[in-house]
Every structure is written in C-alpha cells, then in structure tokens.
Length: 381
Image (cartoon, rainbow, N blue to C red; front, side):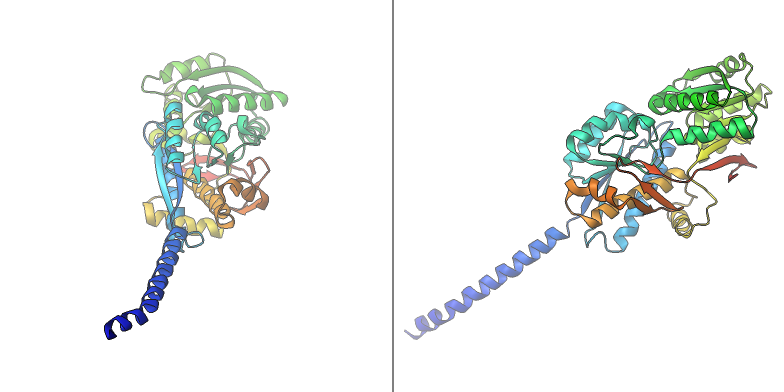
C-alpha cells in the first residue's frame, strides 16, 4: 500500500510541474511570436536599361535594413526584406506586388519610376498596402488620398526650377525637347510642365521629339530632327544611358547647344557612357552629392564600405523611404494605422535635411542645380 499512497501524494506536484512547464512553453511561444520578422518588400527595375536606378535603390534599402537590424530591429523584431524585379514592365510590376502581398509584407518600398507606380496604384489601394516610392515624381500622383507615398518631390517643382534657370540665367528663348515614352507618365508630364512654365516667361518650344527606349533607337535621326527647328537650348527627358547616347550624337554633329535634363538621368551611367559629351549639362535635383550634413556624411561612409561605391540620389532616397517606413512601424504595429501614423508626424529628418510630408503623402524638400564638370557631378547652388 505504501507505494500507492506515495504516488497519490506526489500527483498534485506532478500536475503542478506540468502546468508550470506549459505556462513556460506558452510564454516562450508568445515570445517567439512577438519576435517574428516584419516583412517589407522592395520592388524596382533590376535588369535592363533602367536597372541602375533600381539597383542603387535596392542597395539603399538593404543598408537601412541591415542598420536597423543591428540595432535590435523594430521593438525587438527584425526586418525581413523581400526583393523583387519589376523589369520595368507594368504587368510584371502588378504581379510581383501581388506576390509580396501574398507573402505577408506590411508595406512596399518602390517602385522607382512613375509609370510603374501608376500601374500598381489600383492594386495597392484595393489591398490597402502602403507603398513608399523613393523616386517616382509624376504629378499624376500628387494631391491624392491613396496608399502611395514618396520621398521625392513632385516633378512640377523640378520643371519650374529648370524653366526658370533656363530662361533667366542661361538666357535661352527657343528650346527643343526630346523625351522617352517608356516612362511616359513621368516624361510627358515633365515636358508639359516645363513647356507651360517656359512659355509663361516668354520662351518658345520649337519642337518636341519622342522615342521608345531600346536597342534600336535612332539617336542621330532624333538629334537632326531637333536641330531642324534651330533651338538655342535642348531639354532631354530620359534615362542616364539614353541621355548619354543623345549627347554623344549632339556633340558629334559639332553642336555646342546648352543641354538641360531631368534628374532621371543623373546617375553614374550618364558620365560612364556620355564622357565629355555630357559636360555642362544642367539638372534640378533634391539630392546634393556634396552635402556636408552629418546624417549624409555617416550614410555615405557606410554605403561606400558596404557596396564599394559612392551613393547616388536613388540610394539616398531609398534609404530615406525605408527610414520613413521604419518610423511608422516603430510607432504602431497595426498595419491599417501605418498610413495615418506616418502622415501625422509631418516632419522627418532626412539625410540632407528635413523632409516635410503632407496629408497626401507628398513631400517638400530643398532643390539644387547640378552640372557635370571634369567628369564629376557638382552642385551649382
């Protein structure tokens, strides 16, 4: 009988130990749940003619993610970055965004061009998934209450700046324009904005030529057609590679016509492929490569150590887009409140100064005039 009595006496202790173990297990599981990674997507063009924009943007986001994860993540949870290539194709852009949503991302950083951003807008609004674009500046996305945010200012600010400088400082009166239709939402909008601003000051647009970026572009024919109208200045709205090729043909024809360009072309590819032909070209940009702001100096050093190169505007704006998103995630863990949380702060510390965001997710930031001199991008003002 003694063994039976002993077992009976110990049974409550056994039950208590089991209960205690279950509690510990549940706490552990809850802890694991609380430490689950926060999934964030990045989408850009990582292959093809526009890939330098997407690749630099991807690297900027990677650095932002690595930096915050080293610091312990967001409220103890690491960021898991899922990267997709939209190949600068609207159908692919929609498909990869769907994939990211199905994989459980809380938000998407991208797309890098205006045309891809507009292509995915119906999807992100339907799914109520916030998307933060580093570089899409089309005015067609300005002043709309939707789920599209950006950290670059709308293109009308760029065109006003360029038109004013072209007319008042460069003394240009009759300008021709050439723009790429592969990013039509951005390029055609920028052309129309520039035309309106330039003509309002008394200038004239003598001709406008378009092309579709690709291997078969007849750059020489384009430039000859532009010169038939005898302009005293030329605006190019295209990627870095296409802008470089156009400049090469312009200079081969012996022309010294002043050149103005959209900030889309302001990447390392422009100088690499354009060489001396792109010397003196003018841009309006919200990115100052020579900035001495302490945040930028630190970022520039870290980026160079990580990727072995100097960051361009795409990398900087992508890093800032990630920081904007991380602030929202650190303030609320409810995805449906992420949009309002980011808007309510209004002012964010950027890498080169404060970024002011309005109720529509559009931003205001300082602009600079940039040119190419001795094979380098330098700031004029």
